[in-house]
Amino acid sequence: MSDNTNLDISILERAVAGFDLVLTDTQKQSFLTYYQLLIEWNSFMNLTAITDFEEVCMKHFADSLSLCQAIDCTKPMKVIDIGTGAGFPGIVLKIVYPNLKVTLIDSLLKRVNYLNRTIEQLDLHDIKAIHTRSEDYKNQFDVVTSRAVASL
Image 1: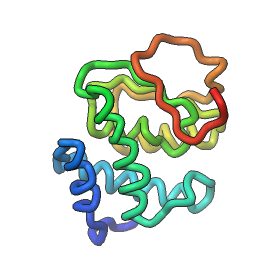
Image 2 (image 1 turned 120 degrees about the horizontal axis):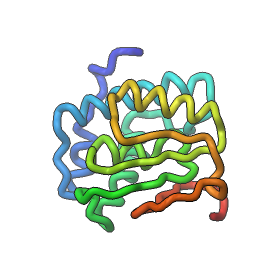
Image 3 (image 1 turned 135 degrees about the horizontal axis):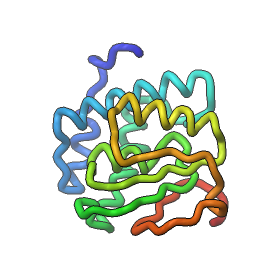
């Protein structure tokens, strides 16, 4: 992975301050690592068209965390992220809210492989990526998220 010392994480810090969130040093480092993995894997598979660090911070990371304005994510909850793609919002939520139990669902195995590698690299727990379609996965969840997928 390339060096992320030139990346200005304060962009994300300022964005989430509006949600009354203050990121820990560990969370900031996780976001930097997540970004590097995203860019690395995006070089050989289509995860996102947005690759500029500032845009990723605003359009993926901060946007994913905007959920906390509508739902109290500090409570223990089971979350399913349908059609997660590159892990938005599921992985982002898990970085900031370790209390969440997150299931990521994607219909493409290569994306699930990327997600599992990212989960491992970020040392996240109580989160799993599953290769399936949402219609095939039956379970109880407190929150269902989905960004940019076909009609549910």
